[in-house]
Image (cartoon, rainbow, N blue to C red; front, side, top):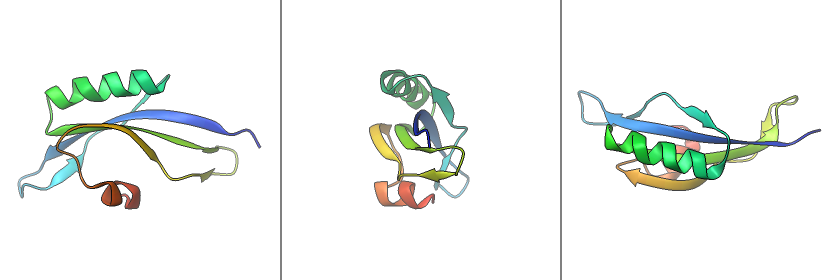
Length: 84
């Protein structure tokens, strides 16, 4: 049961209805790298978030995501954790 932590940066843009929608998430090697990538993404998007998830890939069991940093406009934390 090897637990691993993934660090991710994900941009958000507004669709035609003005709603925030997630763009393509990108894995990074560390929390700092995810934060830097999210900062850069937010320059070309409505906003971006850096987060981490820890769990066991062999079982598919993961803890809730932990938001490391937000830039610009992003959905509420509750919406992010629910996957909206």
